[in-house]
Amino acid sequence: MPILRNKEIRAMSSEDRAKKLNEMRTELMRLKTMIKAGGAVENYSRIRELRKTIARILTIEGETAGSEKQGSSKKGGEKQ
Image (tube, rainbow, N blue to C red; front, side, top):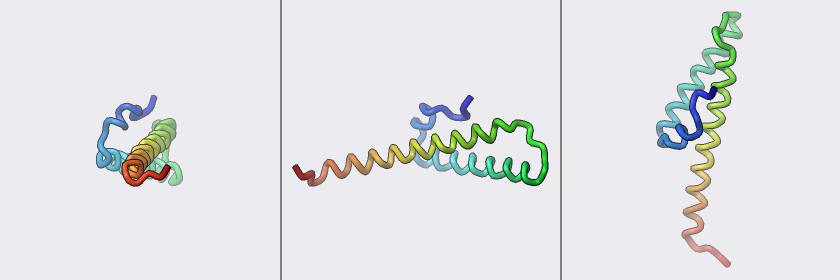
């Protein structure tokens, strides 16, 4: 089960996405550090969920940034 669904990510503002991304990267780093140190992690599947959710956020952020650039360039001087 994903931590955040696509609908929830798309509903967030860009600033909220950046905050959430930072939180998830920090948690992922903490879990990876625990594993490397030889500690036991409660839920290994949490690492996979975090990685996939981070990728989702980055993908959606890229889509929205790309659509904004495309929209602004089409309004300008479009050559035919």
